[in-house]
Figure 1 (cartoon, each protein chain N blue to C red):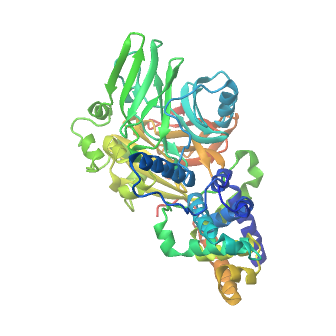
Figure 2 (spheres, each protein chain N blue to C red; figure 1 turned 90 degrees about the vertical axis):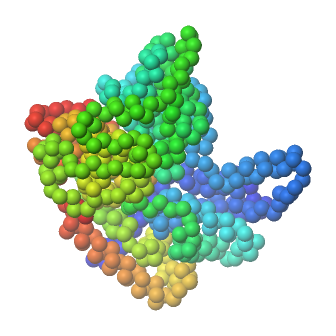
Figure 3 (cartoon, rainbow over the protein chains, first blue to last red; figure 1 turned 30 degrees about the horizontal axis):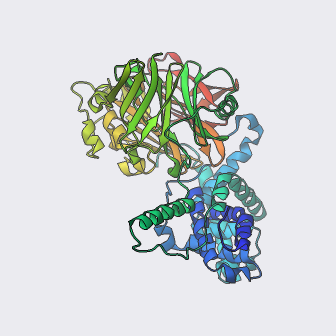
Amino acid sequence: MVRSVDPSFDAFVNESVGDLVRMAYLITWDETEAEDLVQECLLRVAKHWPRVRGMEMPLAYTRRVLVNLALDDRVRSARRTAELGLDVDPPIDVRAEAALENVEVRAELMEALAQLPRQQRTVLALRYFLDLSEAQVAAVLGCSTGAVKSAASRGLAHVRELVVSETQNSEVCEP
Amino acid sequence: MTDTIEQELRTAFASKVVSISPVVAQRLRTVDYHPRRRRLPAFAGLGALGASAAAAIVLLSSSAPAAFAGWTAVPTTPSPGTIRLARLACGGVPSADVLGADQRGPYTAIVFERGSKPTECVTEGRRVLLSQATLYPPRMFVSPGVGNATLPIPSPRWWTHPRRRLTAVSGTVGSAVTGVTLRLANGTRVRATVGHGWYLAWWPGSFADRAYPTRITVSTAAGTRRAPYSRSRLHALFAGCRLGTRCVAFERAVRGLIDLVPGLPTQLTKHYSLFREPATRSTTMKPLEQGHLLSSQDVGVMGLDLAQARTFKLGRGLTLFVVPGSAGVCLDLRIGSGGLGSCHPGPSAWEQGTIGLGGGGDFHGVTTFYVVALVPDSNRTVSVGLSNGQTVVLPVKHNIVVRGFPVEPTKITYRNAAGKLTTYG
């Protein structure tokens, strides 16, 4: 379906788009923005495809473009975004009461992740969703391994803090 | 602890990505990413320019798929199999309760009877784009005075995605009616599906897109009659806006000149502790309009007092705005970038409670049906009956009940302001 002159780019898009969408979604926490982000990223990669195609890992390069776009405030403000609030986790399934406790814990974690600064969430997603090593995360972000280690540790601490405060404030309350 | 939280993070991320709609990747695979090399000729004669412009439009639309791509203003008739699938997707069982159905491109819309309440549901394959009960009391209908047709006040009650706002209306028509066409403020003409005493139509967009009807055309064998969507009559329909109350002029509300009605109706402060406590933080029109759930029209016709709005962070990314007014109450539940909202006219809104039942849609690939209710003080719990036969007892906090279900809630039992046990649905 992709109308590109180079069929290898079509194949690359078909293979990698799912991975890129998931990555973008975990960074932005918003489906619409993730879609926009991946589209923009692939447009940029398409422009340099003859060069990217020759790389050892075109997907790693594309991920780097994606992350840079996602963390670039100028691009973000230019993009149409609709960050109206936090996303919702799947609803409580009354047919699975036994899983309720797990759902509640995950819901708190989801809310904490949604509140994290985008940079910290990106590091955590690269480390704990894609299971990249600290060196690989550093390569994607274009920074040192030490910086990744420290960002991941700050991110974990922040999540823990948010989960604890959410648990202590689980009553319905007016802000 | 660290190992545990790392494991929890893996699980949380994995469950988050499961909720991405597969349509996103599908759309991205169809985008033309290849940079354009050919430039359109600047001036090449009128005929050539016309052809080039047309080609450019096609390219643009292929790169940026429009919301509701393939939607048609003139519906076709879906096959019985498609109707059964839509009914299943809408949380029911394929049965004879479907009153009407239409197909607009890849989208199937049905009206079916749930108890005695007709419900509109719009689907795209197995995805539910909208599900709303047509719970308009009779006075909320505008009649063009022909063929017993009625035009409900259109209000986009539900949408699941900022790019995919839609409005659906349905109404009753007499047996002599052969056709109903709605003209929208943005110039679109939408032909409704007519049959079995019902008509059904839906279209992309909402008030924010000027996608609300301004005229209804009803055809019978005897001829065709057109009727405007009467703004003054619409305003007068709200019995809660009584003499002596400072009602907001509808025209002013439409132009964005919102008058606030000072104070709250005494019934609200009497029966709802929520409104006896001072509002800690009022809201402005901005957050309400950002989600396009409550429009300035809602504010106008309900005489809403934004300074008296109560905002609740409910956890799990849900925020509820409860906005009272001299002529009704609006409930606006935000869920991520979508949500659901509904307005209920008074005085029944404050005497009988304000119930939003079964509003449903597709949140990140999960179809969820919500109960959103504002009930009087006498309720510590309410019981909700679900379409799968289960009954669930839910706690009431600050007069509010909000809960999402994977199956459709069909009724709610609670106490009204007089303390009488009441079942709604």
